[in-house]
Length: 450
Ligand SMILES: Cc1cc2nc3c(=O)[nH]c(=O)nc-3n(C[C@H](O)[C@H](O)[C@H](O)COP(=O)(O)OP(=O)(O)OC[C@H]3O[C@@H](n4cnc5c(N)ncnc54)[C@H](O)[C@@H]3O)c2cc1C
Image (cartoon, rainbow, N blue to C red):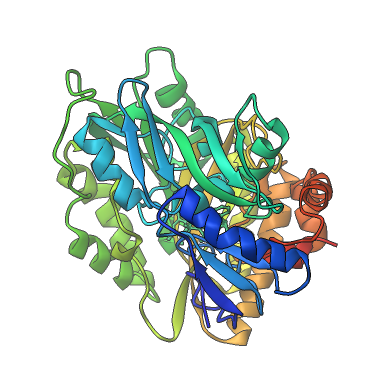
């Protein structure tokens, strides 16, 4: 039995196969299984990193699961500004290696728990400004295909697979290792401002995109305090301190994790707690926050905020909307959320620039990603309410020419997936061409591929 980060998907699998610690040993372990699957002697294979997706994208009922985590070699070429990592390596392992040499990841999520293979396969994004998702930082990767061959994919080699595999949810083969661009680490000074959500897009453009702006990371947070629900926002921007770029700096994590956790978790199930938290985030955080390196900002485990209660789950969803239509979407979302009787704990806003590389792109123009963190009871009624709310939010995103993120709960309908991802059918057709035996499968594919 395996589950994923939702804790809502216990799944009986045929068994778990562990990657070796190198490309060669992994290929030796996996290729014979791929042959047996293709011959019909074994069930298909789902590929897993840390299983932080929430809709069985890394699982397959009755199927094999490849645990890629042992494949975690890390080799930094400082002169070339590139790091070669095994796809099972997590950012938790990579950040210290880069940090020691004065480098940092160019694009990753806002926490460090995830594997690089999982990050590439969802085409992740984070708090980096002015940048497309992680696919834009990939120089090349090696892929174990359904035929058992190892091929190199880059913007000039096996170009079709390059675009299909990045953001391709493990359906085209096993990413073995990857060459990723790195970025100089630096000490960042934070700047906090409170803005009306209706003005967020304009303020963001003035602060971050303006000529001469030095902002390199930023996030927004929308109020979940019932008195200013989604109407007020905090914009936090990070600017490098002169003279610290490329320096080997101490690696810490964002400060006071126990206090952060207490304030966050006490807001669950309580309007007073949410109001208190908003006050702390708006009034106190700017006083408590000091300069922090890029790596230290990124070096935060999800455990700081995670829900461990047996009866409730923290569930994420993310909607991407064209930047100038943020407020239009938020107004629609506010009505849906108020009617939906779901508990919204947190909303962060990320800047994601247009993605020109992946077949299943969610950032088909410059977008804001709105990450919504819900607290959901472990009951079928709560699941039904969440499903209905999610479908309405997806429609609201599509109405403003936006889309939604696929690593989370698979509540979207067939039709919504196809409207939000016009390339979906082409990608499924390409999957059947590259993997005619459907050797690689998971629950995302089983849910939406006809
Ligand atoms: C608390 C939390 C915070 C998050 N924050 C962010 C965020 O800030 N930004 C963001 O973009 N996302 C975020 N996510 C989503 C996260 O990036 C994805 O779920 C990511 O896939 C997690 O990596 P993983 O190693 O757990 O992948 P898994 O969940 O194990 O796998 C995800 C997908 O990748 C495929 N896969 C994994 N490894 C390989 C491989 N080697 N080869 C081929 N396919 C592979 C799997 O088959 C699966 O389809 C967050 C998720 C959680 C739970």
